[in-house]
Length: 366
Ligand code: 5AD
Ligand code: FES
Image 1 (tube, rainbow, N blue to C red):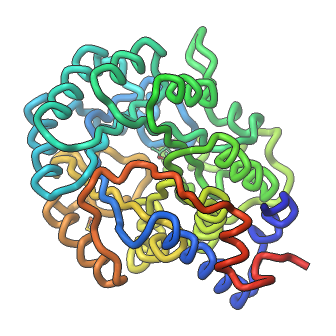
Image 2 (image 1 turned 60 degrees about the vertical axis):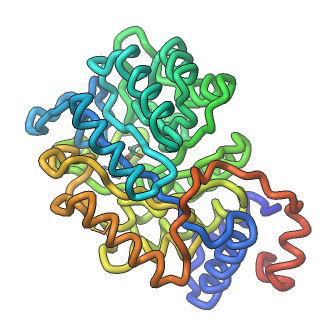
């Protein structure tokens, strides 16, 4: 078990040789716990409407320049069929926090996907009422994704204005999902203005404490039509050392995530591919990740789902992304998974893994 000081020290590490050790450790852990298969989760961005005002996100309600769409059932179904045709194990229905996506409509969609395809269904529709989460679970939804973004409560509150009368509490939401029997996914952004190394170490601790089934980690990318992206920084957060936004910093967090949560499913995120379009996907897969999320959103909507600018795959069709990711996976000597690829808990104890596989001393600091 790594101490907090060790985690922070790894997060600050710059020595290339030591970082190579870290990458090798996390890749070995990945291979022993989740194997060489790369699971594909077909992503359908079903609505770009959002009532929230997260200070980093291009879909925030106040961004009047954002163009908004909500996919029809027919459009969603066409995308779902592509996921099944490509043998993806999972389809992810994602959106802004959109009250226009009604409980019953989502439940019907889930029910249809579960009865007519072999796909697992992941929902990522923001903070929703417990009753809705229950209805969707009862309709057959398998998993829910909701990133807590940062475990630093002060930072979280500074960048997530509440809706009137509704206090945002993502950890409580994750608890509800867990109690309903969802596989639970969460995650953070790396390099949020005001984020410190200590708070990132806290994030990693929370990943482990929550025993998350899925953990998404991506770099924070400034969006000009947002408060954080236009240089605003909450008063309380102006001091302290800032975590940089780089592919390497993101990879350190992913690698440590794999070491702390050996059998979680970890995606190589689109945001990582966006800061390093040449190698980002690969770096993620080589440093802890075992999942990719090919985009199935119809081309005409891609550009509108602009969480951050410069997002890759804006001009590529579902078929393009399918081929691109398959090639990238195989070029690494890995293979695309065809099953649902849910969480499997590894039988090997942590101490044993460290002893067997890392060579003595690699993880010892000082
Ligand atoms: N840069 C990087 N990631 C972002 N997200 C939202 N806005 C940004 C941004 N500007 C991430 C959040 C959210 C997920 C869907 O996308 O972590 O949970
Ligand atoms: Fe979309 Fe490579 S994954 S083009």
